[in-house]
Amino acid sequence: MQRVYIGLGSNLADPAQQLREAIKSLAQLPQTSLSDVSSFYVSDSLLPGQPRYTNAVAAIDTSLQPLALLDALQAVEIDQGRERHERWGPRTLDLDILLFGDCVIDEPRLKVPHYHMQARAFVLYPLAELAPGLVLADGRTLDQLLKGCPFEGLERLPG
Ligand code: ROI
Image (cartoon, rainbow, N blue to C red):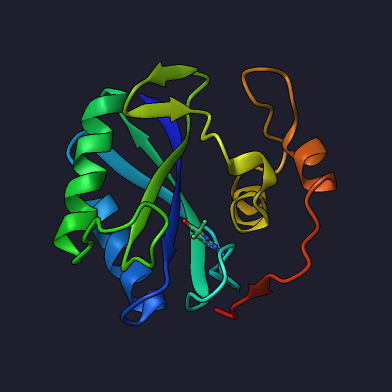
């Protein structure tokens, strides 16, 4: 079993509802149990001209292999109406494997730790709710990453 952190994001078609649906799907993945879900956070898109995003992080425990988990997550994205038009375009659902235990994965389809997580407040602050003392495989602590990434611009939704 590996503890895996998954970043969830949506900026189309009732984003908070998209995240709630996705969390139900995570709980139903084979060989997997859903352990924890962060608060939801709203923020502007990093790219101008897109609707605001709702983001969260989920913790699962799984015995799926990384690429099998990636396949399963992409099936959930497609099931929730994600169409892959432009690489950074608006999306109904984005599911990213942020961390997979202490594994460092460098495959064409999957890089873990997730390449952009260190600079993204909408990933780091929800992750910190679930794993405050986290240390990455390369020794960097979540606290260090948070210090370099101001909370500014994030809105934590109640409930
Ligand atoms: N911006 C925010 N706030 N949240 C996201 O999940 C997100 N995802 C993206 C881009 C377009 C980079 N901007 C984002 O892919």
